[in-house]
Image 1 (cartoon, helix red, strand yellow):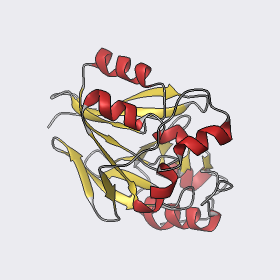
Image 2 (cartoon, rainbow, N blue to C red):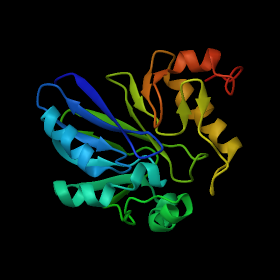
Image 3 (cartoon, rainbow, N blue to C red):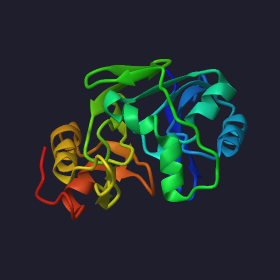
Image 4 (tube, rainbow, N blue to C red):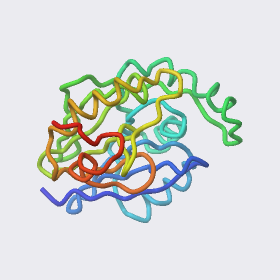
Amino acid sequence: MGTLKAGIIPVTPFQQNCAILYDEETMRGVVVDPGGEVERIREAIDKTGVTIDAIWLTHGHIDHAGGAMDLKEALGVDIIGPHEDDREMLLNLETQAQMFGLSEPVRNVTPDRFLAEGETVAFGDHSFQVFHCPGHAPGHVVFYNPDAKFAHVGDVLFNGSIGRTDLPGGDHDALIRSIKDKLLPLGDDIGFLCGHGPGGRFGDERRDNPFLVGQSG
């Protein structure tokens, strides 16, 4: 098994971190949250030389899922995730685009497979545990790889902040529970990528994040 690597392509006016997770040895991997600007994502895939096995979605907001159907068709791969509680959100991405006044065409998304708490997803030898972490979005999931001590947390947790909860389906208390009960117990040394901005480590967030100070796993 080669080293797990990650590349980031900021896309859309929201500067969402579309991620390419891949094995450095086999150069096979997945795209996580292709929110838009699909041609830029495809160029990054070609430049990296990674063969993409699937598209993984953390949740159904437009800046994370808006390019999923176009990328699926371009690459001939399945869309996996998020949790089924985001089904209606994904079926209304075109409405979301109108609400945010986005000019880039957006298509509604029908995943090939929804995910549930306790499932695993993988590419090659890299296996990720699935955690259902509602609060930012009802069907938000987090992908955790214990071997690499790495998590892709989407918009649940940020470096110095947490996901917003003022959008439809948001729930601040549920978000804090998701972080406190499911993420922090994984350990202070877990590194993470998030949906916007720089990543970090859970321990730093537990100690310094103003939304989490006093929370423990």
